[in-house]
View (cartoon, rainbow, N blue to C red):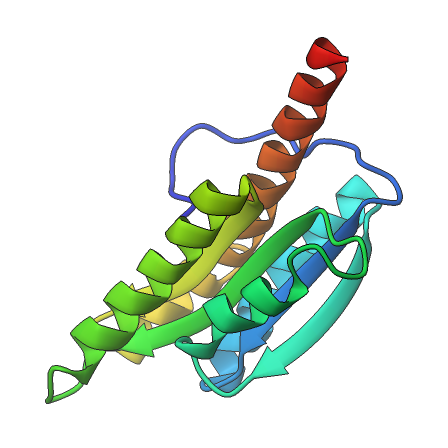
Length: 158
């Protein structure tokens, strides 16, 4: 997951095709994540396709289905998992992250993970806010940075 730290420069990648996969379970939180992600993607001048899935567990499956199809070059995963009273939180948080990491490594895919894993909705709002931690923008920047790196490697090996 993209984290707080040094500000990343958004690579300029006009025309790159990016799939934005959103698990829209918490609309207020997701709207903030989307605002940040769309700002970063817009700054890079990429083409965005947005798909909504039921929950965070479905995000890796949606990315896997899209890999190699329709020319998507990068993927941004957005959603939120809030700890509840059961162990369901650990399952959803861990498996959605593991699924994205596995896809990224196995397929050399440029994936930005913006799935928040938090104790409560207040924490999520702080992390999602584009004027705060901007985790949606950070996830988009991570995907774009990986895409730029992959393109750079392809040029070096050509």
